Image (cartoon, rainbow over all chains, first blue to last red; front, side, top):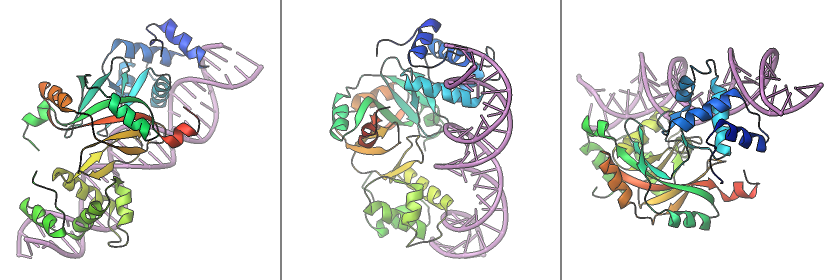
Length: 147
Length: 147
DNA sequence: ATGACTGCAAACTCTTTGCACAACA
DNA sequence: TGTTGTGCAAAGAGTTTGCAGTCAT
């Protein structure tokens, strides 16, 4: 991958390169993702878009995020507890998932996962990403009585 | 954890210890999990139970698996694509998830995740488990034209 | 002009909840 | 005998699909 688009113009170029049209939802959702480093749910994207582009439909949000995922601009995290998370793919990092409340926190990447990728390839898997998922209780849930 | 129950009697003891009753669904679902090492969906548990205990309801399957999870007997995997997987927690291993078809494969564990657990604790996370999740295309999907 | 994209509504899958009956302790 | 657990049905959350109209190219 060359480098992720950092401006509207670069996104437009990337979209056209791949035969896609440049539309308001695409520009604005990408702008939102550029400015917010954290992960967002589809619903959060929708409400964050309420000012600039009210009335954007849920299917459009999903379609746009799926397109961005195919273009390698975001990664979809499906941690089960509630809605899927979409995060701009920048530096590699890991995730900690709270078993009780479903909260997902970012952890700075550090573990070498080359061995895991190699094992996946040995199993016939065309792997392109690996991350560590830590499970347990987040600080808030652990404080509110263990479970 | 001492060791996972390997017989009906040991499961019964564990259940009573924790103030739970010993019932047919619990015994039979646990027996099923003991015999099958792989991960199963709730629906697969249900159909596998059709012979020994027909008519077992979906809510009961979920309730039983959730109880087992609380007792530390199974781990729930929620990889987004479709139904959650429940696997008997035995040796530590990692998972490879196919981005296209959602298939989840087991990979023998190997990566040391002590550092990731430590980082999670540094973030206030009471972490009790860590695994590597590899994403990409499984052999079948990779063969059927890349995407 | 033409076909991709959007919005609306509704369908779909998976999981959970509410309530009455059954059965473990 | 007193609850806990079960089954049934229905609700709920999140995501996807079908279709008609709109807009980028």
